[in-house]
Image 1 (cartoon, rainbow, N blue to C red):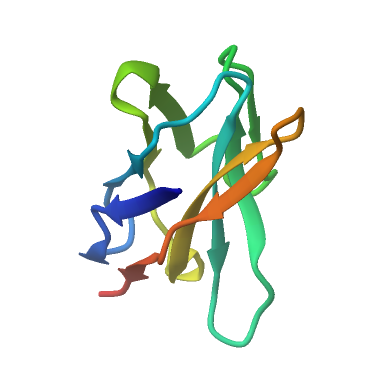
Image 2: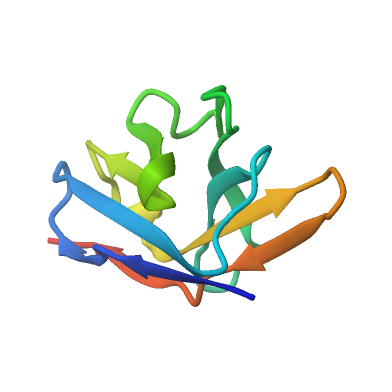
Length: 119
């Protein structure tokens, strides 16, 4: 079993920056695992923020691709989300996930970390 633990959330002023981290604990992630971040704002559905494949290919939501950067450190089983130019509408709970779509398949989610952008 794998446990994902996020950190780095908090309160930041508009225009500020935060870096989220998510480390996988347990038996470890297998190859061909995509890591990513979703977020869920109050009263809204969970939406994709960014993903990164085991080969380093990244994908971003259109509203975030010029401000957010996703990266991973495979040796540490960790994924990061660098967020710059934060806006009040970025306020949400950010969840990391790990997904493998080839056998053995799995999807793991973290518990989430709160990001609040407010003056």
